[in-house]
Image 1: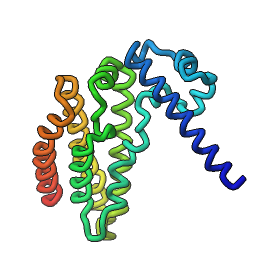
Image 2: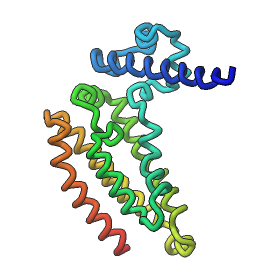
Image 3: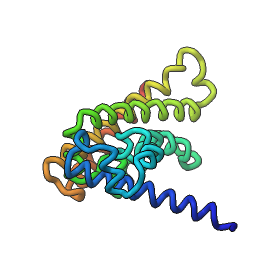
Image 4: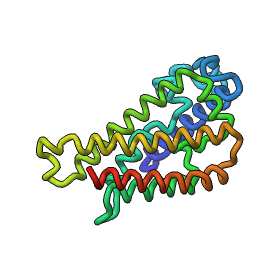
Length: 211
């Protein structure tokens, strides 16, 4: 009996992954806009309501890393090493994600990247997720800021910093997608973008230190 909650949770995760995998296959084969929830439920051999219980929005079936994506920058700031600045932690995490070819920053493969690029709905949803990512980062930076940063003249600083940092990460995501669609391999994209990311990181450091 003690193991039942763990087994139930494991079963839920398996069902969720199955639905997500079936949805991704159909989206790539038929296109996001053309695929219905009913077709996904049929492919996964579950009820339509089961699909919507796990994924309330159809877009979440395609962009199922959305929670990790929107909270990623904020968590990096919150979980940074003692004495490490938020900007240094973010630069470290950005480089690690490039080396890992993380799907969260855009390494999705050409078929998936094309599916997203061909869907106005997913493009709009990505914009929303980028905005949420920036908002979460702004809150994390405000929490991380010293008490003096709460005075009126400096109250905008975390939000301005978040806009610059999130803008740089949005550019990185777009570059990965563009290079993927251009036929570059993940290793080639990594090699091309690490120096670009380092350069952008240096620009961010200079801009934020001067602010």
